Image (cartoon, rainbow, N blue to C red):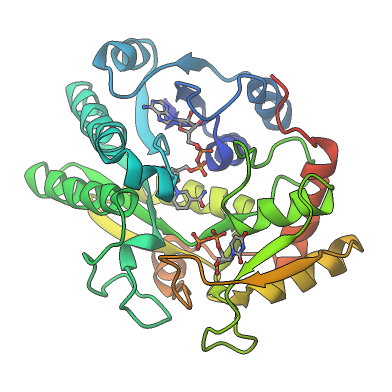
Length: 338
Ligand code: NAD
Ligand code: UDP
């Protein structure tokens, strides 16, 4: 009996592989290395302390997926494989719909063919759009999303809910992540963005290591305590453990559940800068620039449902998230080299 992790060589997937094995699951990984380097494999195995089968597989291709299901008794799938760059999705909407939606549909078709009906899916807080007030709760209306990436998450949520209605054995745990940051405490796996990072924490850590001169703070005129935007940052290992809890839940229940994974605590951009400086003793120079288009004032989870249904809640604080990010960045200034 094994759990298939699609996109298991990526940022969140690699940490989830480690936590799943630590929790006693056998893990099989499928990744096409679109946004991952093969060098991550040996690091995952070293942390997991157990061999893991890795397949080069594009989830859009049944012919890539079928041999994995033939080879292994896959009882559940944790589905991370997808593209995630908001800006790119506005330029390449069809490619995003193809990879993120066709990929899920093909994966589910193959799962059904092999009688596998438990899926944990990576959704995103971005489906809440711009109009819902914080804290964000799962039952709030969604639909007014701002870009094709967010729409792929919303459509996937709806497809999985339809599947659960059509097939009463199917179980889909749809996890809406808030802002994952941090890295494994070993400093051997972490986030390895391509080129100049879009997200706050990798940008700060590249400033800290001297690859970028200063942070641009996107707007200080938001209605928050210091004028900068607020987010619910969550340690990637906490997030990974949320997936372990979600797989256990999916094993025991049928139907679709949508669940936030966040801490319920909001920090501004300048709070994060201060926490990073405190955790690392490194000064982060910054300049305030105009707001970034599409940004909202605050994204904050109500994490109650995750606690009630999964028995899960985040453990790590912001300072630990900063310290672990920095250890990863220092040990791997150029990310995974191969
Ligand atoms: P990532 O890019 O690091 O990992 C995704 C992995 O999927 C990569 O290893 C990539 O090579 C693989 N992949 C992409 N398309 C594939 C395909 N067709 N077939 C096989 N493998 C494929 O991203 P991540 O940050 O680990 O995110 C994982 C998931 O969580 C994504 O679906 C993303 O949209 C979602 N998510 C991420 C965040 C975040 O801030 N990181 C927030 C919310 C949701
Ligand atoms: N941000 C910033 N400078 C950057 C990157 C991000 O000021 O170089 C801000 C951004 O405006 C938001 C917060 O940091 O308020 C988190 O942004 P990120 O891109 O990490 O996450 P998202 O906007 O997707 O929640």
